[in-house]
Every structure is written in C-alpha cells, then in structure tokens.
Amino acid sequence: MSEETVISVFVRLRNRLLQSARRILPRMEDAEDALQETFVRLWQRADSLESQKDAEALATTTIRHLGVDALRAKQKNPKVPIEESCELKELADMEDECRE
Image 1 (tube, one colour):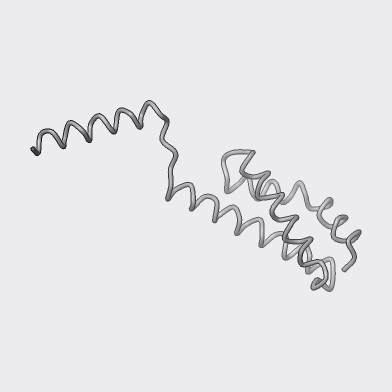
Image 2: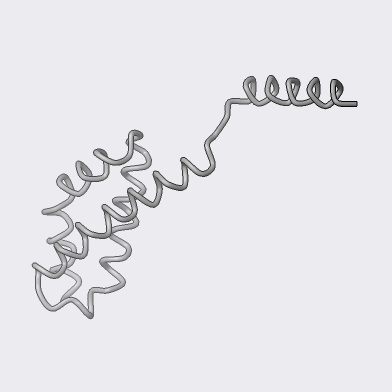
C-alpha cells in the first residue's frame, strides 16, 4: 500500500480512533499517545497491507490493544502523589518502630 493511502486512511479514521482510545483511557494525553503509536505501527506495516480495509482493521485493533495495555500498566504501577507517598512512608516507619 502506498504511503499516501496509509496517510489518507489514518486521517479519515483519526477521530474514530481517538474516540476509541478515549473510551479506554481517561486522560486525553494518553489517548493521543496511543493514536500516535497506532500511526507509527500502521506506517511501519504499510508494505504488507493489501487494502484500505486491512489498514482500517489494523488501526482499529492496534488502538484498542494499546489502550488496554496502557491501562493495565497504570494499574500495575499507580502513581502516588508525593504528599501521599510521604505519609505512607511515615506510616511504614512507625509500623517498623512498633515491631522492634
């Protein structure tokens, strides 16, 4: 598939792909990152795509998988605000002192 065709498919699907990512990912920045990565992967596989339908299917599947993967990664490694992190450390230190 030509580069121009890949670009036109992506431009046509952009809003729909972004909406799909937003259904999975609460932050717009994360959804936009997934959208950008989807385009990169589509671009890298342009030579192996035989039709626009193949490109659409790949883009739709890729954005969904990237969204789920990003969500799982955030759940495994939740970000704790610094204040809360300090409070948790203080509690852990107090528990350690009680055990000694």
